[in-house]
Structures are given as structure tokens and as C-alpha cells.
Image (cartoon, rainbow, N blue to C red):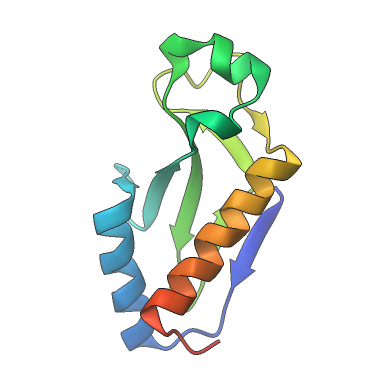
Amino acid sequence: MRAYLIDEIDHSDMEQIKGFLTRNAIKSGLEGIFWVKVPADLLSEAQHQHESCQPHVFAVELGPAFVKLEFFIRSLPNMRCTCPGLCTSDQRDYIIRFAEGMVEQLRIRT
């Protein structure tokens, strides 16, 4: 899996990140996993056409001292469709901007 990783994060900063994601993402049923919606204008053609598969999201995993943002776009309601896949370059840029914006906004030391 391709991903963007931020590691060696202090425990107190991890708590801030968890709070940020609780406010700005969808909490999954798995501990430490969040879903972040991809804006509609960044969806691929197939993802746009599959309205019943929306929202399309990327996963954020929280570990003890890391945050991993996956470069895989998936459908929340339909994991078995053909529209999920590796992110486009625009989607990848969005994921990186999301991560860097979170770090900057929370003033996380990395």
C-alpha cells in the first residue's frame, strides 16, 4: 500500500491529532482508523459516475506515535465496486495538503 507517513510524534500531539480527526473525519468501526472524504471536484470519472458508491474516502490510521494516510481511494458504502483504486495525482496532492495542514494547524513537532 502506498501511503504518506508522519512518525516520531509525541503522545500529547497524538491526542491533538485524534481530536482533530474526530472533528474533521468519519470515525470507522476500527480503533485508530478514520475516513476523510475526497472533495467531489477531485473524484475520478468512474468515481463521479458511481453516485451510489459515494462518499469516496481515504483512510487515516493512528498508531502509538505515527499517522499514516493511505493513497487509496475507496467507497464507504460499496467496498467491492470497480471505482476504488490508487489515488490520482490531484487526490494525492489533496491527501498531502490535508496532512500538512493538520500538522501546521495543530503545531505538531515533526
